[in-house]
Image 1 (tube, rainbow, N blue to C red):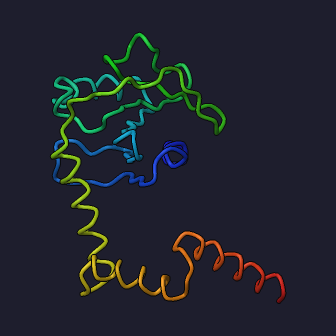
Image 2 (cartoon, rainbow, N blue to C red):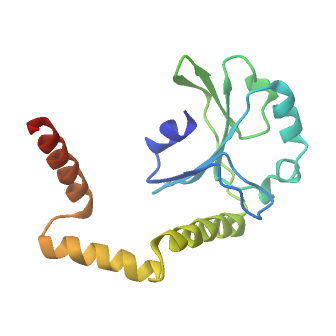
Length: 169
């Protein structure tokens, strides 16, 4: 649910990746003009209380995310339980309600965010094989540019074409 909610705001969203960093966010995304947005998902009150004991929670400058939220079942965490500047999202019957907007942490651990992104790019590199990631990305963009179709619209067209082919069979 957190991924779906954050995907409406951010152009890049990553979730549930373990890295050697001090903090492994449940969901993190980046949006132009907003910066990074972190969501910590909590299913129990004891999990929320344990989270408060983490070093990155005791020192907000050590944590990732310019804006930070807790996502939990409705009523599990109350606004007055939150650390300063944190937002609260309640999940109820597949819907997310913003109980409090995150106010932003101007001083965050940007180095940890870069290391996290680097780790994700290394994983992507492993999946595409021996070609450097930048070469692979340039190649894809060049292919689409030769066809005269922007990359995003091209993906939509391909999905539409597949749907049409499937409906004709």
